[in-house]
Amino acid sequence: MSEFSMFKHFDELDQESKYLLHKAKDATNHAHASYSKFTVGAALILDDGTVVTGANYENAAYPSGMCAERVALFAAAAQHPERRIMKIAIVAKKKGAKELVPAASCGACRQVMLEFEVNQKKPIAIVMQTDDNTWVLAPSAQSLLPFSFTKNNLDNHPKK
Image (tube, rainbow, N blue to C red; front, side, top):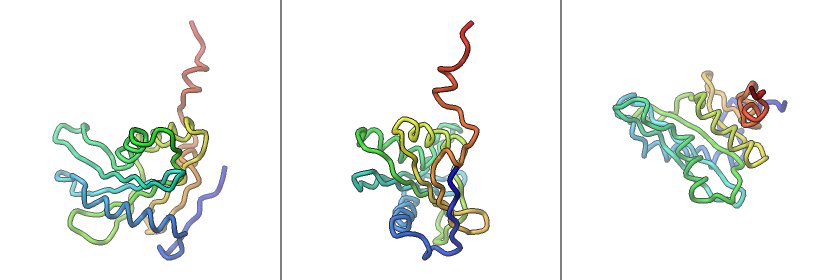
């Protein structure tokens, strides 16, 4: 399994990651987080350079809302089904604040990223901020979800 790349300062990240993080931060302005006041933005880049963004959208009928990561992933799949996702950046901030706060993808988003990765037969790099404000570049969704559940688990299940 590949190692995570850790960066203490935003400026240490590669240009593409910084660009995606800026796009993800812009996406937080479109979040509907009237309950948690925790706005999340995601930006992903496709193999042709197209950038797709998403923001979290909460709903009073919890858990009917959607995380920013899945909004971006599903939008990319719907709008660009022939393209591969190369990298996704995720950021969060408190509603109305300018400063970002640490946020890692939830388990459901990690599972969805993993399935995209399996389907496209190519890893998706993930950029996010950790609890100690370190920036992390993960080499793949698989690296975030090492004991994963995929279609192979369903296919290899013994028949009765």
